[in-house]
Length: 382
Ligand SMILES: NC(=O)C1=CN([C@@H]2O[C@H](COP(=O)(O)OP(=O)(O)OC[C@H]3O[C@@H](n4cnc5c(N)ncnc54)[C@H](OP(=O)(O)O)[C@@H]3O)[C@@H](O)[C@H]2O)C=CC1
Ligand SMILES: CC(=O)[C@@H](O)[C@H](O)COP(=O)(O)O
Ligand SMILES: [Mn+2]
Image (tube, rainbow, N blue to C red; front, side, top):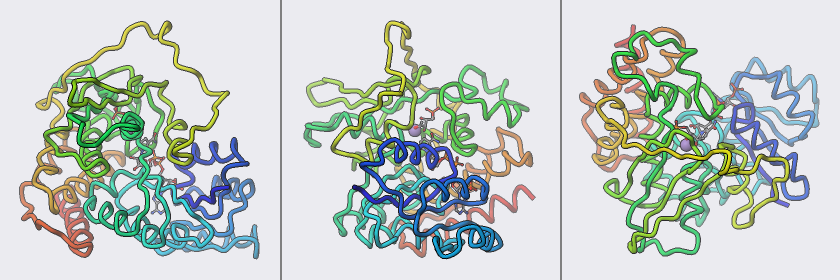
């Protein structure tokens, strides 16, 4: 039995993590969970999974949970609450399914307590990948990829030697606006941007997918997870999202992982690695039905965020922190209807241009740069 702590239980990855736990009660038990503001869903989850502790984003929601569950559940809130859940004494595995760099501190705290981490929350690796990976090594904990592309790479690496890797190839769907020209992006609406062709995900990552910042963040995520230089990480547009990513080896053999677009597979693989769980209810891949798969080179003039991410990743230090923080802030304002879709990349570009990079940043530097970048983007928008 593996005891799981889950942060981000009410989100897209969180809900699917709970489905995996529900379908495999002989393998997993939920002992601690954290949500943000979706208290109605959290209450249903607490009733069903009966964790020992829960956390919510806001203090005013604590009493609602306490009144319903009394002494059966301890209730925390805010950033400290997220950490309480992440380090719960009975958990051996943390599923980090929150969105944004707020996942960083709970991840580091869980690593210090020796928990293995299922990492869906890519922003944590983008903003402070050097700290997360070096601490994971120091405390001998596993960072198990949940992001579909990184799970595919992880699966394609099994049984092979790291020194034989020639190249990682990340696939990208191209997002909601894959077939539009730059001119056709002027004035696009939030609901158009949220209409991802293949995946049903949270709002922030769906917008990231439309700007292709998602793929940029994933390039940096792959760099840290697999310790591969940026020159050896490529992106290919593959509109069907059937091949989840590929690894090319020195003999030019390419190993890929395929499947229907379904996040439960990578979630379960991270939780059960190195074993695989049976999934009888999920739709199997039917290549006869699919027939044809397509591949294209991404146009970095059209998808500028992908280029920004490569540049920020190569510069390193605090540059990826700025990339991530500016993107989080600008995307939030797009979702709130305050800025145009194409302004997202402008705000990120300006934040990157003005930043004086710190080459080997400490955690304090990262937190300060994150805060300062968000304030800069906010001030431009206001
Ligand atoms: N969805 C997907 O298929 C994939 C997602 N990912 C990555 O996984 C992560 C999660 O994505 P996704 O599930 O789509 O996101 P969602 O927006 O669906 O869920 C985010 C979760 O974080 C919680 N949360 C937000 N703010 C706070 C806060 N201040 N305190 C505590 N909890 C908070 C939300 O709580 P609440 O809703 O209650 O406010 C929710 O549970 C992201 O980093 C994303 O990039 C990676 C690959 C695929
Ligand atoms: C499911 C998943 O891992 C997402 O990150 C997905 O890959 C987004 O699709 P894009 O390829 O459009 O960014
Ligand atoms: Mn992905």
